[in-house]
Amino acid sequence: MSDAPFPAPVFVLAGPRSYSSLAVGMIGQHPELFGVPELNLFQCLDMEEFNTGENPDGSSKSPFWKSMRHGLLRALAEVFSGEQTPESIRMAERWLRTRDQMTSAQVLQELAEAVAPRRIVEKSPGILRKAEFMNRMLAAAPNARFIHLVRSPIDQCKSAMAAKGGIGVLLSLNSVDHRDEEAQLEPQILWHDTQIQILRFLDQLPDEQFVTLKGEDLLNDTDATLKALCKWLEISDAPDAIEAMKHPEDSPFACMGPANAPLGNDVNFLNSPALREGKVKFSPLDAPLPWRDDQEHLHPRVTALAEALGY
Image 1 (cartoon, rainbow, N blue to C red):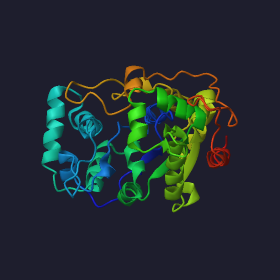
Image 2 (image 1 turned 135 degrees about the horizontal axis):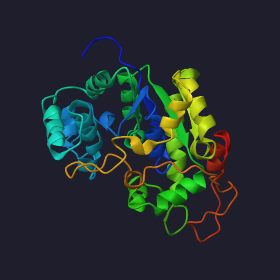
Image 3 (image 1 turned 60 degrees about the vertical axis):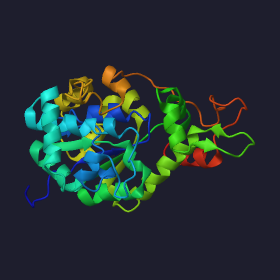
Image 4 (image 1 turned 120 degrees about the vertical axis):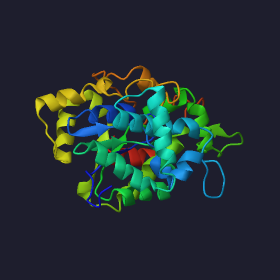
């Protein structure tokens, strides 16, 4: 690794079910960029943590940690072997074991230098759980650009409730309303807390280092939205570059991986990665919540935050 700054990555910060897999897949297809799966690097201080799935105190990082490693394994296999096969995934495992004492920042740098001059585009929703993880990401790439990707709260919450394993995720992140005698699953808590966590992180950055992007705009006004993103990222907005970004299915990571690392991204995206342009309607903020039987509406704080984000 060199001491020179590596090409500035682009990190997409988004809660679950916010079109983030599609957004990274699209943006990462720009000829000057390189979209990767969810690396989950910054939940770890070093590769020993990443390899073992254990925190420094010996506790487990996540019951899903084995599959959360797939993204980095697939990225390493593709970048250093030019393919994703069971054999190249085993090579990636060996690559990681020999770097047991390297920090997550050093691994990001090695991967970024390998794909240079293209710039890495990545999202790992798990790092939004702790400010410590997000600050570790910033320390590793202080010149990175950040895209705050949002989706209308009612529609994002509906999608989270309907997604395979979504209810388990909501429960694990304590998205539960305890105000009544009987506790009730309430996904708007996670929507609100995720946006607040992102905004607090971005508040320490200069304005030119981050941008807010509504996922609905990406689908409803694709060409104009991508063109504006290119200008902000200071990369080509030529027609062929925009066209390439409209084909996330061309990414080597836009499919299921080999049997020893099949995931690395949302399984729905992996099974059907194409862009489907069209008018995406979103529920008005004053609509009754479809996941509740009591005709409740969004909490006033959620409504105010959604309005501040452009809804």
